[in-house]
Image (cartoon, rainbow, N blue to C red):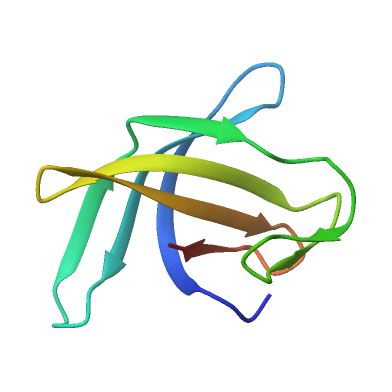
Length: 93
């Protein structure tokens, strides 16, 4: 998965094994660390191997979340990808 930016994600793991993303953190273009609370999300995981609309290739094992965050009082949509094989989170906008 080469598209996107590597980010930190704080998430909750539920007793049934589900993952719920809570916060995303990354370094912005000015070198400042930014943290955003995830207001709502849609779990798009486990829908088979495919190429997403933005060109990101995912497998059935990839966790995919379409999330809403507030940036400067504007609601923005981001997509978070977690690939268990690489143990890293990627964000696209």
